[in-house]
Structure formats: structure tokens, C-alpha cells
Image 1 (cartoon, rainbow, N blue to C red):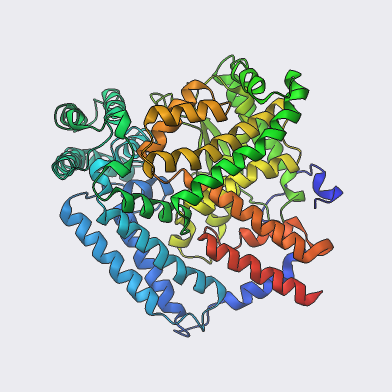
Image 2 (tube, one colour):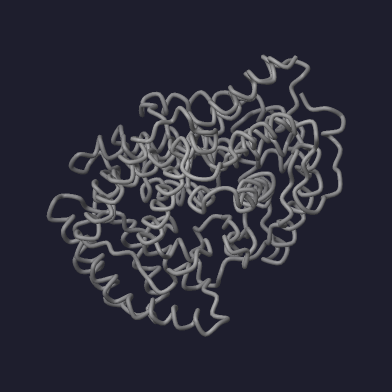
Length: 563
């Protein structure tokens, strides 16, 4: 339960603030994680394998390395050729096998986590390569290969001679990069692995806005001539309509949730959360709209006035972030020194692109940054929830703390684990309500709107990709069960089609964090302090959900023994 102190909004502190009540457990964790000289108990071997995985992943995805500020890759692009895939898969197989061979018994906590994560991440990446996702993943979604490259190019820092030279070499490599992608798409079509026609059209429109870049026009024309005519229509847009689609989706669900939850169970979880939101809508609906009828509340939310312009949107986003920063020390033992930057997306970003967070660079040259889309002027009541999700206490707390952990390998600081990352950020939206951060009841209804969307994702993502729903059925479900604006309903469904399984991570991760907190509260009773819980959850950076459960369980057991 929150104490009176935790309800106060305290001023932000500089540096990492560590309150001494947590020092006992955290200090013992650090002592157990201290690395002795030499190779003892496999410690040096685990670190070496993690470094190899980091090099393999950054070499495979150099554009992501650039966005993360990892030096040495700014002139490169991913080799998506068959031969490139085979080399990467073999590297991953070898790395996973060597990590598995390390005896976990003598390892300290951090090294045991590293060993587990190497196996989980290497296996997930290997599955993605082996299943040839690149052949049918064509869209304008930033999580897919071409849009993230276009984003990185638009965001490139060209402030030194070396960076300008690297940028020019990357541009020079783009025609071959796009030629390889076009060839892979054609190979996929011959094998029955066809992209979604709707998404191909959206990709073509995005490329039209970037036709000045090398190789883009030729790739755009290849999509129009060779790929679009073979695209799946809206009635067969899920991956279940591809060869081996059932296993494709099962692997994607495992990769993004770090669990073995079945599509049936994931589907039911979404329905259960949606049912539970009805009473909250009724209570807040009476306060804001004078009605407890959920459908009337939904209609009212869809008619909320738009922002008067991009400046007003940015001002509100910055105010929400600063308010959260001021309140955070009452709810966290450690507060990042780095403040989160807030900015608009680069000009030309598609109107469908949602707000997002980019963690600060490893070298510290760019802070964690929250980007909002000036083209999305409606839904002002939904502005605060994504701000808390993406910044404080969400992704920025996770991201800035990871980057400050210089005792962790670069790979551990930059590894992406969707279920943890998005689960924590979605938990942060609800935590922000406990912290008193929402400015009014309408903004709290905005929080419920995003809850509905994330619960709806479990239903719609599984519906499309496991149960063969048509796109129209998915759209109608979200219209009926959420107050999302029509354009957002449309773009969300397309997002689920573009990156199957990724949308599952949010609610699965949040439900697990909430379950662990409830269990800790029950077992510790009056000794439970939410600040200590948050410290444990964030103590080992991003981890699979089973590893997170182990960390929290160990903390609870240790705390119980001391009582």
C-alpha cells in the first residue's frame, strides 16, 4: 500500500538516489555479483559469450546499433541475403550452446541472469531468421527493416567528419541492400510466404516520400510490380494463412512474451481484462460525462476536442514528463540523473506512427528521448498515459537505469526483451494513477482507453494470426470494446498484421508485474514497501518474465527471513 510520503510530489534529485533501507538487500546482491580476478565459476566465460552475442547482434542490425550509440557500425546495413541469414543463425547456435554449457551453480545473480538471457535471446533470434520473416514483413511500421532505416537516416547526427563519411558509405550501400530485400520478397512469394497487400501499399507510400535516397525508387518499383500483385487480401491477412503459419505465430508469441502461453489462453486473458474495465469506465464516466453507460462514455471520448496545434501538444507532453519526474523519488529508491528529452518526430513521419521512446545512447551523446507525432492532433485526453508509459516512470526509468549500469555488459544494457520492457511501461501507466499524476478524470479515462487497447491486442492479435479472423472482424471488435478513435483502430490492426505477436508483450508483461507485486504485498504485509519492489524489478535491467519472477521471489524470501 502507498504511504503518505509516497503520495507527496517531491522535488527531483540529481544523480542516482539510493535510500539506505534498500541497501541491505541491494548491497548483498552487489557483493554476490562482484567479479573476482581470473576465471572462477564460469564468470569470465559468461561475460565473454555475452560480448560475442553483442557483436553478432550489432553486426546483424547496425542501424539499431547506430540508434543506440554503439560505435563502429554507422557505415553498415544488414545483410539479408540467404548466406547472411545462415551465417547469423550459425553464430547464434554456437553462442547459445556455449552459454548452456556453463555451469550456473557457482555463478552470482547477475551472471546467472546473463547466462539465461543469452540462451533465450539467441534462440528467439535464430527462430526469426530460420522462419524467414524478412521475406513477408513489408510495411511502414518502424519495427520492420526499411522504416527503421529511414528513421535512422532522418535522425542521423552528422556533426563530425567521421560521422559524415560513415553516413555516405551507408547511403552508398543502400541500392544493394534494397536489391537483396526485393530478391528475398520474390523468393518468399514463390514459396507461398506472401506479404499483406494493404501493408505493401502503405510501404510504397512511405517510400514515395523518401524517393531521393539511393535505391529507394528501385525498391519501391519492385514492391509495386513484383510484390503487391501477390499480396494477401484483408480476409487472409494473418500469418495462419502462410505455410507453417501455426508454428510461425507460436514462435512469435514465445519470443515477444517470453512465456509458453497458448493463443487460446492469451485470447481469454484479453477478454477478462476488458470485462474488468467496465466498472471503471462507469465510475469515471459519471464524473466526466454524467453517464455510467459504457457505450455513451465511449462516444463521449471519441468526441473530445483536438489539440489546437503541435505546440500545445508538445507543451502538454513536457509538462506531464516534468510532473512525473518531480513525484518519482517518493516511489523509487533510485532515480536516474538523466532527464528525458521531448521532441516532435522528424518531418515526413507517417501520421499513423504512435509516440515512442528511444533510450539514450551507450556513449551518453544523446539523452533518452520521447517523440510525439504532430500529425496526431486528436485524442488530447490520451496524451498523458503514453507520456508516463514512454518516459517516467516507464521506458525512460528502465532505459536510463540500464545505461547507467556500467557493471553490466553493453549487451545486457541494450538487449530488447519486449515482455519486460512493455510490461513495465504499461504497469507505469497504472502506477502513474497511484502517484496522482493524471491531471483530471478525463485523462484517467484516457488511461482506461489505453488499457482497453492493450487488452484488445491480446484478443485481436491472436484472432488474426491464430484463429484466422478477417481484418474487418478485428476492426469491428476494437470498435465495439474500446473507445479508440477510428484512425487508431485502423492503424492498430495494421500494426498487429505488420509485426505478429509483438503487441502481446504489453498486457502479458503488465499482468505479471502486477501479480508479483500482489504476491509480495500479501507475503510481506506491513513490511512491504513499493519502492523496494520497484528496485528489485529494475535491478537486473530487462529480463525474461520467468527470471523476473525468480528475482522477486528471492527478495521476498530474503525479506521474510529478516523479519
